[in-house]
Image 1 (cartoon, rainbow, N blue to C red):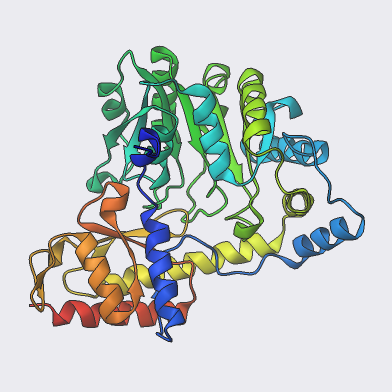
Image 2: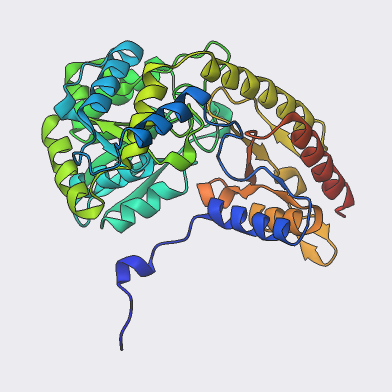
Length: 398
């Protein structure tokens, strides 16, 4: 009997995109939906970036580029790493891809063999474990505790290191919980990685979105040894409101980037040429647009946190990065909505969307049962309206 592969059959669809798809379907039916689900800035791409794309088109820069990206963009990315992170990379150590997601997948593809274990702090971004399974690896979850602000403890990582451990995925600032890993914690993780000899894949896509005077530290900057074991992943999507342009990039040891380039040459070739030129402009011309966006997110997170904490049965801690917060909804577990018991955040999210047209992502998708992820990448008016509807929904439970 003809069937799809076992590897494909074990992959779960993205819960984030599933919620977003259902929310869009309701909108298409004429419903007024407040979406706290998808992780996408609601700001327009800055005008100077759009102008660079127009110039690229007008100048005929619409052909294939080198697989790892244009030389000028890779030079610009190298300058960014040196300026922002204190990391010196040659252009041969940088690869540009069709989004940070592709960079992550390609890195895993060239590092992980069948049966290798990849450590993933939990709560985690929904795609990490699925990507690991897609390349034949085994995800091993490292629990992070609510009382620690969901910041991973190095000793919890160490307890799960085996002779099969190949890599650790780090994400700071974090999706889904907005946590920022402190320098001291990263130093201990770096020491452990060097001692136990495993790679680190450091997803730093939310690097620019940070608040409360917190410091973003790239683990690769903490010494030559850990730098030689780290692939740093970043991109244009979040910082420059360029989600649809699909440009990500990775930097790391030359042998790894060479292997990633060979893999990408067969899987996808080069990233979009026009978007590459736009990204070069975005990074080299970064100015007040990014700072203005960060200020807006800062105010929105404070507002959302305050409003959620005013709802009996719901709670949230103030996140320090990205544009997400984890809402603790354990206070409503066991209550009923009509004949349905709220037995999980899956049930909560489904009923909230159908009854009140508010989209949130259930915590089970991130390895955090009893929580739901809210994105505050929406305007203040929608935040107020969405939380008001949530309050009405919670008040209706018996």
